[in-house]
Length: 162
Image 1 (cartoon, rainbow, N blue to C red):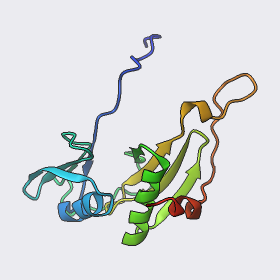
Image 2: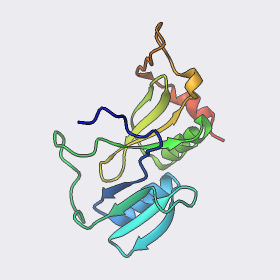
Image 3: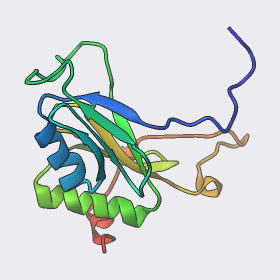
Image 4: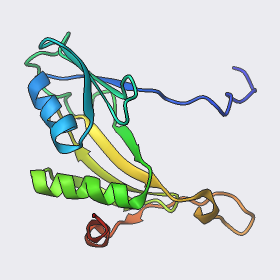
């Protein structure tokens, strides 16, 4: 194992999800969350993005058409995380979820970020979050990062939606 750290410029570009029903997945990712459909390949795959990127999320039924969600207690994706640029844009996402009747599994303040947790129509975990500015991240007495998990006041967050 290499002791050298990965380059700081490395990022995660997209996630590709197996879904049971492409229309249902598109209704959630485009209709509720507001992603834009970039490319569709019939009833087998679609690629969606924010801001004209080639794709942030790939959706496909290649191995999963009509399939059930992953069983609890099995390995696989815990959740995908979608980063919003500001607290106001996260508030807008919460408003969209409320209006669509999508329930939350949880809502947390981690000190460095605020996050909403939910399931997509295929049972995939989804985290919607925004990062606080680094200067506001909590630190201990020696200057080390001190993350935590506290309940997020979703009513206050929702009030920020424009």
